[in-house]
Length: 270
Length: 240
Image (tube, rainbow over all chains, first blue to last red; front, side):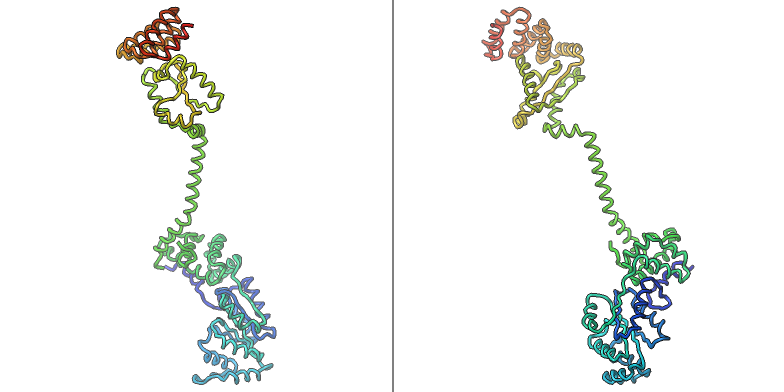
């Protein structure tokens, strides 16, 4: 027999799926800010925040929203090397594939971009930009200087990556958008909306405010951590539902299970 | 999920660890409450023990040495500590009165009416020297005197213990019964002619009953034999 918690568990599988996008007050504000920045004559925009704050999903969403209005491209995974990156870029700019053994002449590419000025406005969203080396970032800057290609660079906010941001973008980035962890209210809303989207009303109602208080304390409002924790909570609930139903109540999630999930994920230690 | 059992065990450990401070707090609260409760209920006892610095066993030993007779088990004992100098003066006064009459050693025997006893046992002397101002007094109040005396008299007929006869001589003298005091002092002297107190009582009782010259004669004889200072003083007193 299929447990009711199985579906709930699957809701929290961590993925960057636009269909899973939950519109929250904070994310709506970030979205509007980014959309506004894209419309400005900027060369580069820096989007940064700690892992799990929703940068990727925001980039994904803006791509989906603007893809019919603007020439926008989303590079979700960083290229493993310069050659691959320029192959991808060449395809975006020329709409043609480059033969595998051919290397892109960067100067020629810059010239090509200069020629496209005022003819095309290309927006490229670079996710996980901390993976690109300094040389690559310098080339990206030179390309953005042509004013044909606008780069939106998404970075993880850690001490080291802040340094990268300072070194490479300080004098060039014209707009910085920071994504922060969700407040308890936003996180509660996120969980409920996520469950209701899959018609899991009863389970959504079984998550009380006091549970969210505890969950927010464990995850510090991070969406990815929150997804991980809920996935584990419902995984434990699923086990009990199938094997020891006396240990579970359907109208609420026992605090014990939340703590067990937190123990499993290492938020708390014995 | 296959690792649910280890996870449950881990959670149990976590719960115990989490609750530990609360258990400690609860235990502390119980202990503190109990201590406060005990202190409030036995405040007087605790404070008196703390102040006196005289251990309970010494009291017990005193009791046991005093109550050697079953017939005297009904005596009430009151412990009293006299701290200030005024009280001490009063005590000295009382003691003075007693020593004027008797040897302190005689108080090892019970059945005296309102007698204050200074604890000057040889073993306890160390403590008394350490704190000379602190003296402990026992006030023994007789409640069943007549029956108690009869019991002692009856026992004397069986045991012929000079302590019993001396006790009776002393008590009757204090009660003003000179005739009986003389009789029991004589009985004591017959059993042991070296007891100074019995000679003193005998002489005093004789003098009080009007036979002053006989008393002087007896005392003189005793002084010749024993050279007793107490007897000499009494003799001077009687001669005045």
